[in-house]
Image 1 (spheres, rainbow, N blue to C red):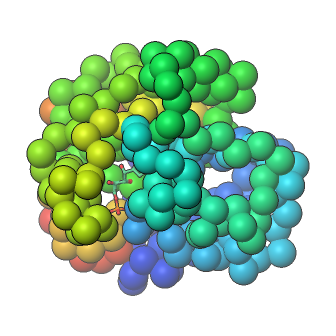
Image 2 (tube, rainbow, N blue to C red; image 1 turned 90 degrees about the vertical axis):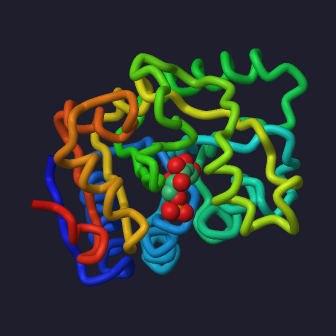
Length: 234
Ligand code: F6R
């Protein structure tokens, strides 16, 4: 596991951008993408660059179940706003949060991932060590699945909604096994609230209680964090 400590999230985004740029020069074609605050500086760099993604495929980690793509809290909306409006990809896949049959949607998404092996997966990390919506206790062997969000995640996300009742209770999420099958993984973590998660990810035991800890077993992971998030590392 390679650790890059940066001054702030802007510099962190630039480091991640350089990895994507180099990957594309080497022929990478499929990017796994995350939402949330952590990758925004990276997406800004991608938008401001002269890189062309029109021959690339993107696969997002997750989507709320029950939110229309036009809802400004959906991850579809987030990706359009922060990346795809300015930099369209040839194919962009995000779980369909409005699918009538969620089990069929889960199968469809697993087929998409199997048909498009991910070259570089971008990840954020939750305060409790979650990656995507894979909360503590999620089996390391999981593929795409339906998730019942925990109270702590619902509370953390409620700041983006008018009230807590509006926060979806379910999501569709790429599983840990699929994430681990990506050729390269870049995890972004910034700010004080990520200190414990970063320590557990890098130095803690590999345990399903800290989903991100499995990344210790992946051959090509780069953790990019700012000085504050890295402060508890030995
Ligand atoms: C987003 C996702 C989440 C976030 C994590 C960190 O697609 O899967 O796991 O990466 O909750 O969120 P931020 O970056 O907002 O701190």
